[in-house]
Length: 125
Image (tube, rainbow, N blue to C red):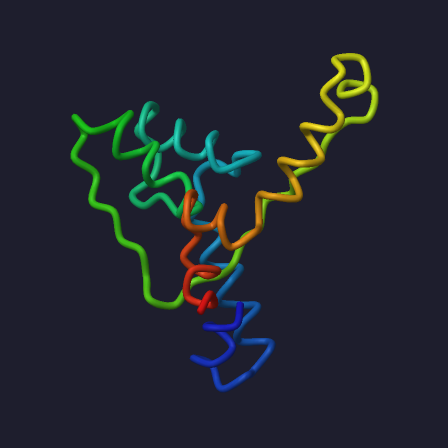
């Protein structure tokens, strides 16, 4: 709502009114990014898909024939996905040490070079 706040001079009532009208245009409130992609690309519902940047490569590959235009705005938000191990599962499979090592490695500068996250790569020296 930050952009709407700025556009309306930080008038909370106007921002709420704008967001209410904006959300009335949403045909389906899916439970996640992948579901929204399916609704948009396969069911043909909606004019625009707003999704996570990480979903863009999936869309380009899976729905290449549709020729969707992908726009990634300069102004964006950071959406960090949680990662975890499940004690019961890693203990049962004998993978606890490997799971912990992977998660400790995941956000290291070395991993970011391999898996490239735009925000972190800008912050790295």
